[in-house]
Image 1 (cartoon, helix red, strand yellow):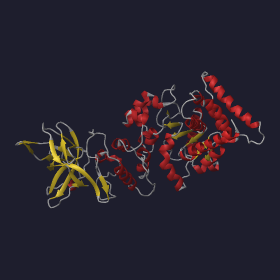
Image 2 (cartoon, helix red, strand yellow; image 1 turned 90 degrees about the horizontal axis):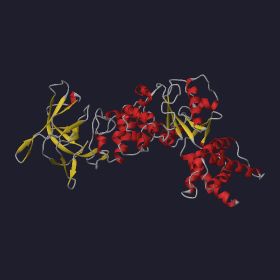
Image 3 (cartoon, rainbow, N blue to C red; image 1 turned 45 degrees about the horizontal axis):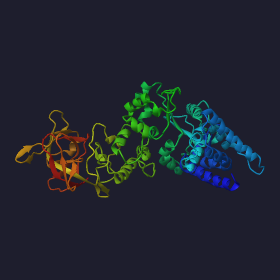
Image 4 (cartoon, rainbow, N blue to C red; image 1 turned 135 degrees about the horizontal axis):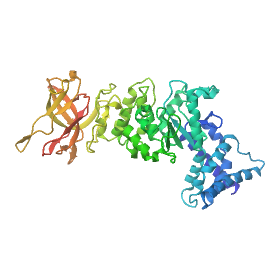
Length: 523
């Protein structure tokens, strides 16, 4: 390769390295051989594009068909040859320090790239694969100890007590990372300078991407020694660990004594069917989503249900831990409390067309005039199976939420069988002189101060079926539909949503199809 070609390849490698280091991976990493924190700039400076160009040119231009061991030896020989060529030129600086160590550790894992058909495919993609194989990192997921976790300041000042439980955990994590061929690692305890609001903000908003781009996520379940213990494991109850479960492509679970919980023969527990079935039972997340989760604005209600049983220490983290799950841009402002979740819901409602967002129960957010936003994910329940139809043209503005519903009038009375509960009874409908009830009475729970006899009552069916030009809708026989309980004073025009403690579901009884006009309601 001519000097000009070498310089071109160096420039391309530098661009790939900087894009990966400054945009894809955490801002700070543990360099395991020295147990010290290094920055992105440290890593970028350590990478030697000239030595790597000499190596990569040979790897990317030579077809290989030998058995695996021969390929591994060939890759290592190619690297040694690149170093030898540099030594022949006294003006060239030799690879030093971190890069030399990372490169040596990565060589045994690069044969999979060399074994591919190197004469086909995208050369730049293969070059990216080579770079990322050298810079791969492991990431830790765990429950914090009450005290004794090493901080960024501890690591920076070298003030680590080897007897601390948190440091012992960090050491074990780094040992497992090395076993996966990683000499770079990340832990949320010590790789974020939490005294810097800018750094903390970036970490929170980038966390999903950092877990997704890791070579392996190592999960430490401190309360489990076998798969049967997962039901009591607090890791599955915390807010932040939801994305730490879903984001990584490669995941390995270790129990309280750092013994694998999954099959020893599998390096990736996302391929362990027995373990995945147990996790599915605990989390109610389908196995396909555990293996192939895609962030974004689809399945909004299902994702909220997954989050509904999880807790965070800070109220704001209920929202911040879902930023990556929904792939949204949300500023971080600790001190805002429940405002954070309200803001998250506003972003979701503006971006999503899934009416199931509104199938929740319990207290609403108090941060705007609309009652269409829940106070937290706890308002979502997995007890209700929803059909896919419904109006998707809802809008949210400063005036509230505008939603098109089928309005069915009725009355509300006390539940004689269960004091303190209430029943909504639909009014009688007529079709060809035949009177019929569109659905059975609905039992619900609600604060008693919201229920009075001097108001008009109705339900607004959310997922009725649009027909024709979209101005009308229908309910089909023997189907379930989600609805909102509405009321208004006899002199009032606008309906108001009544807060209920359970999601209201009606089941149509009649053999008749019920057709009505859509009514636009501000909630």
